[in-house]
Amino acid sequence: MYFPKMKAKLQLLFIFFAIASIQSCSTVKIASNKDGKYTKQPKKIYIVVICDTKMSAFCNEMINGLQKRFTAKGINSGSSKRNTLSLATEDDLNKEMEPFKPEAILTIKQTVSGIEMGTFELTLTDAGTQKNVWKGELDVSADSYTSLKDSDVVNKTLNTLVNKLIEDKIIPN
View (cartoon, one colour):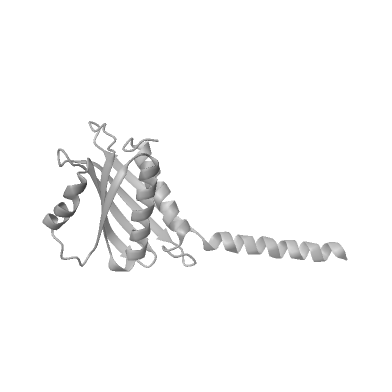
């Protein structure tokens, strides 16, 4: 009689863990294209994020996490965030960025938004030549049990982005 009760408890425990693992599902995909002639690994990157007003918390976490990861790799970074309704001009951004004197500018622009999902266009511009040297598209989505505000989703997004930058030899390993 002891074993059937134990078996039932184990089954309930298994179901609990199965549900818990499903609840924290998110999908993060990235595709990129790098100029084959670009071999620099900039040590000063200015991050510009332009996102939907509804994605503000996610974008703030993305900026903070990306700056921490850059610092861990010896990359100095500055940042600026705008929402899609911002009236700031390109000149305003340049004035903000100028004192930092970046070697490259990483622009992260949200192009698609929806319920618990977003697509971001990523562009790395060489500050010296003003040429785009790397482009990427980052798709992030969470299932109905998860929010893009969850730290697991943000970390998965950051890990995917940083790993792609390493793979494309934009930043050091």
